[in-house]
Image (cartoon, rainbow, N blue to C red; front, side, top):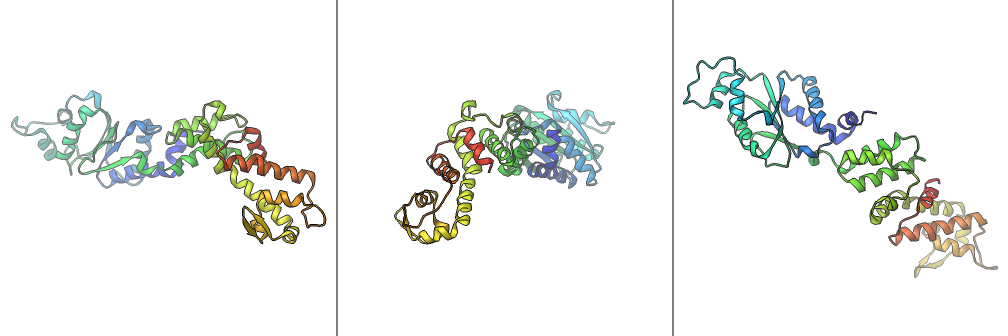
Length: 325
């Protein structure tokens, strides 16, 4: 799998970012790509923007410029003119470039602009507005440059996009033990590495399904939150299965008091009360459960629900047991 290509083509927010840049260029705007160093696979971002630009019908040639190779932006563009015979030394170079019209068929994509050179490029962009187009790759989150489309990662790519990306990576593995395990690994990856798609990918592809996240350097609170999101609902689903299976018998045992509250509907009977109803002595109505069913209820209540409800993490074997249901 080419994950860099997948990121820019198939992850919704990332692809929308490509389209936003291409659309701005198509409508003859200049573009500032801010916080460029945080973009995953930023080296090929321009390839996808260029493709979308030409697919939309853009006609200007995109010329790539390495900012460190340019001492003075105005001199650089001036040197590209085929003829400067009408130029007078008292005239601003940018005005001459703009009036010549010679470079109007190009978009100058300027890469790796450092902060000390940014001012000169921004001034030139303003002076040539309406005549030339630029794309500026800027290493930090810079102020809005007048007359440009400001594009940055966090505006387009949201938590949902990272989650989808992590899920795709986890599901691509051959050693993951089911859908729930994949979701758990993806959740751990996103929580641990937040908005770093490259690290999320490495984690989702390489974390062993049976490993203990806490023993592998992940904070216990983070692991607990991931388990809440991926495992806690399974406990509730299992409780509802018991309620549906033994609805009539549960109804015969009601009403009951549960956490100082009167319970008269089977749907409201929690795991602890289910266990208590299975232990009642004759002649009181009771739930007739098998040994395995009682042990499963004990696991759901004491090992799983109580641990997660009180901020404790489950061991890998317990998580696997839940995910196997």
